[in-house]
Amino acid sequence: MTVTTRFAPSPTGRLHVGNIRTALHNWMLARKAGGRFLLRIDDTDAERSREEYVDAIRADLAWLGLDPDGEERQSARLDRYETAFERLRAAGRVYRCYETAQELDLKRKVLLGRGLPPVYDRAALALTEDDHAAKATAGVAPHWRFKLDHDEPIAWDDGIRGAQKFDPAQLSDPVIRRADGSWLYMLPSAVDDLDMGVTDVLRGEDHVSNTAVQIQMFSALIAAGDGGAMPRFAHEALLVGSEGKLSKRLGSLGCDAFRERGIEPEALVALLARIGTSLPVEPIADRSVLVASVDLATFGRAPARFDEAELERINTAIVHQLDYAVVADRLPQGMDAAGWHAVQPNLATVGDAAEWWRLVTGPIAQPAFSDEDRAYLAEAARLLEWREDPWHALTAALKQATGRKGKALFLPLRQALTGMDHGPDMAELLPLIGEVEARARLERAAKG
Ligand code: GLU
Image (cartoon, rainbow, N blue to C red; front, side, top):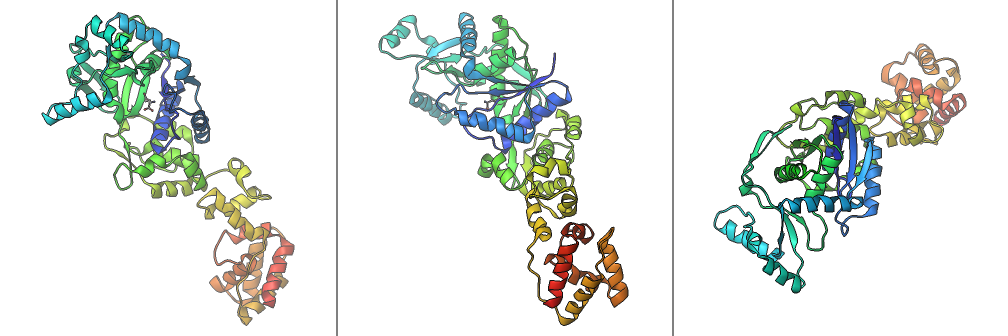
């Protein structure tokens, strides 16, 4: 079977760093195995799903470089869920219920008050056909629950958590369909995973108990002749902020926010690929390296810490590795490969290039110089010769002519030529400034 993973967001909001991480890991697992990575839009909730979010999810994945091999939409598969539902109904695995949210809430409170797990009591299973008919006459439509088989223990070997066991009697029969006929996430997801040949379901550990009930759904669907095979499951530990807590901030951090801060997708990918695993977090810009090293066996059970300061450090290190061709369309006008090369080591973000580039294009504001420095800069203007490596030629000539060295030799030149005390390597910058402009700047500084 071709390894097939999927990322299944509900288009009810933008992607945040937590689900970006899940998408990334699914993408990496598929790429490593030479398999398929599917994007599945979980849009059965027509009221909360928005087309703009579907577009945003696609755009975010494209920005991250997580190219799906196929896209599916649950809203286009409603007939399919109906068929699967009818099979389960024929097999006696779904049943009608009428409790209101308030009634269910009360039942839960009573159980919790007695120190018992808040498991649905299956009261609706005792209803007779007459009871159902009475509800229908009264215009009350049922919602539907999937009937867990209490005699079938639930167990799986989780790719991250190891052996997992659940007693079905300790779980509520999940509601799979609302009274208005619409679907909750559980059944469509299982139907899709079977239909789409999903071999590996990797998602957050908040889905562990969903997996427990879905495993029985998979079995029931397969037994009812629905085809397909049960996927493997793995649940990754949740993402927490640097302070070690689940933070609201993480829920609002998405691709736009990162892009605006000058974070490169490669930096986000390098960090998210490895936090929470036993592999070192490194500024790896080459995705194939990350893909080759992904291994669920390295994923830990402890929450993965997402530290924004670490992201910035990785980003800077990645920016220092980026080729001109990759960033060319984001650079200021006129900045060529030599310009990029000159400023690159000084950048925290690609966007900073514009600021450094102004040192080349001008105008620059020079500081006030002492008389002595002005004489020195006048000498520099005279000695400036335009040839291969003009900076080293100039400083060598000045050293000889004036006896200056170190800071006294270099700093007034840098200040006169760029208006700054620090910055990119002058040997790279000077040829970019050009002879005419360089001489003009030196002369202007000499005049004071
Ligand atoms: N739409 C579900 C979610 O976003 C999908 C979960 C899954 O099966 O991966 O939580």
